[in-house]
Image (cartoon, rainbow, N blue to C red; front, side, top):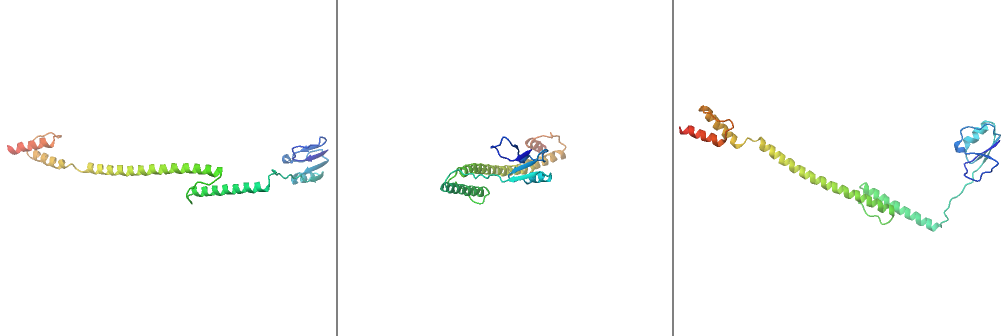
Length: 194
């Protein structure tokens, strides 16, 4: 049996048997000759090692063209190079190497600029908010420090109250433990008047 290995998509001869060389794993039994279309060296080597006659045919190469003229092609390449340059500049802007500037043309560079500009504005807003919160934080820290300092100072009255209590204790006069400064002064005055 003759077997043809080809990855063609159409144009099959109904009298021949075909296999796709991309799916080849080992030579098939009962094959007497093989035609390999294209460059498939492992298929050729496997069948030759099995002692089977192998013919190799070069695959037909098809050149794809769109039928456009060279002027249109050069214009398209020029536009693509301009867009590529604009995108490179936007990338450098994002990396902080150059200031962010609006590109002159090209859909992709303009869309990328709009996205980067939105991100930049968002970051600027966050920085402003962060700075405002830092100022408020410092203000609150200052207030907290002054409140702590006031709380740690003994009240001016406490020294005088302690002196009044000591005078009443020395005279063995009873007083309330939570008596106000005025009440203690009154008791000391009565003591001095007697």
